[in-house]
Length: 326
Image (cartoon, rainbow, N blue to C red; front, side, top):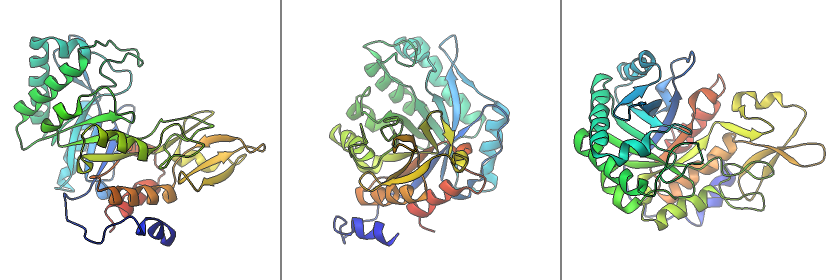
């Protein structure tokens, strides 16, 4: 940790102004037979997922009983904020819904219904991505304008006392940020899946082993007009390699050797030939990301997803310690 502090010492101002309380947003997966998350080291939960119904005029929810149980965690931690994340990779219906005023109005009204029914703090929109069909969903050149209209109308129906957030691609594309910013509380930047071996997928800084870094992604968003205090930095609780592996299972990959990229500030695994075969996160890389969050004045951290941590909560505790510090 001493090295990390020294690394950032020259670029940090001594005249630090207080801003919003930092947030830690955990995406919690609702499918299968999930266990309830421990909210101790979390400020916000984005429940994954809700979705646009087949008729494009309402909100469906994976495992409503589990959503209610997650929402009820507020009895254990009253300051906890639970939001419904709507969408996710490969979930469509957004373009069709948002392009029609009547369908959009009905969908927005159902967002309000869901927030009230499950006593939620708000909505997190996870349309991946307006104008883009790479995930196998419908898209239109009008999606960007319609996304703005959708967010404006959700804000109007939820009012100012509820949260409205959305997940943004690391490329800072697909959204008219300046148009949307008046309606949202903050934006979760998905600074992961930015490469696969032989490239890091969640590097903090650019190096010869990156195609895009978290630092570059944040700068792209700032250039689009997003203020740092309205962004959370995304941290993956999984890795990429020959197959996707939970952080909890990385210790089982004993046939590989762990290395550290001193430039990008992330670990990786190599085979006997020295080739990168796996890219992932660990507490050391999270500590660097946490210092970056503070140095850049970001709102906090977001991670995907809670259940991919180990049983001891190694990564979520590292995020909490790094960002909140107690």
